[in-house]
Image (cartoon, rainbow, N blue to C red; front, side, top):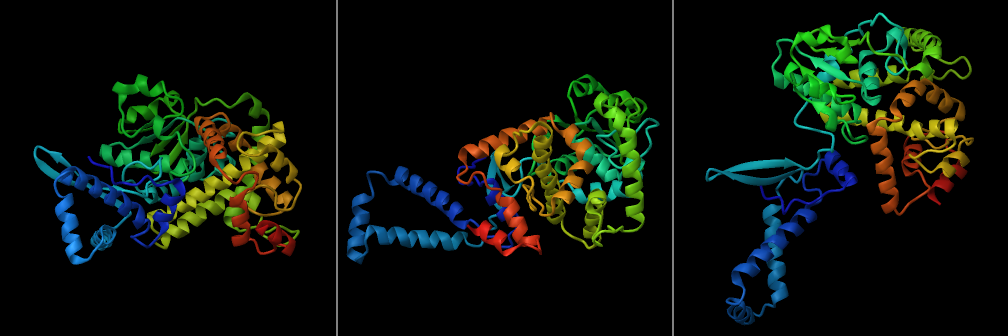
Length: 433
């Protein structure tokens, strides 16, 4: 398969092309490579035998070589203008037959195949998490026994737990679609975190059990109900037939978190119940008590968007924003606990920790930010040390080595300008300076 004319788009270019309605976005990148290829073929074909006659013909017409080249370039651009640049068209030859291939240009690294995140959400959003019969696990059941199944699955993916999707009697391809959708869910729509695809088994069986168990935090799809009878093989089991997610009874609670897990689970359970029945408001200022309702707001936003027939790309964008918001809290937590972080500029974060906006993707006062960190504390502790965390550290260091803007949180500034309604004039001036 010839990919010589396919441009290598950056992460930001891929995002722009992904959300753009203009199918000719980055047309010049494609045209340039196609022109270089045509020019190379022309040189090989015509070298040493057509130069003189061609120059003489141009002289008779009163046209220079540069004008002739421009004319050919304009003609080629007109011929390719109607192509959809969200795909790269190529072909492969098999047994003498040319087979057309369309390579999508808007795919993030952790997006594999053609799956449906909407199908995953609708399947498991309606069911309740099956009780494990043990004390709640702080990394998974962030709201105790009332943790929403989607949040339970998200917690398991971010903290690198062993996740199995069981579809008894289902086709292997359908089960695999759920597994690939879960990879996109945990990685933030496929574009925030990476490392999930490396431990993914879209479909497996008992024959490959030893290989499966050798991976830490695998994500696998099975059809054999025997897996459900062995909770020591998995940490989370997502039953596609019933829409329920079960926590393994053999999953041990981290020793450091065992002492406080009961009190935290009880508090978050009560908060989740009260907020799911009635949107509670703070008695201080009449605003929503968001630090107790973060996960509930996220799930409700997804379900409302699906009911309003939002597309797959829009749903993945909401998941991406949610995971980015979570990732903005990880360096803040590390600074508070250890005084340093590998996911940001420690000196800059410490210097802005007491300011009203702080170093975060979401603006707000310090109190609400601290409550948000406290709410996600168990998930953050489970996330630190995972493969996704180490990959995020490596990505941040790689970005810093090639980034021209350092010591400034650009994403935070853009978010403040777009969403904050109480920015002071001095703060706006400071952003633009």
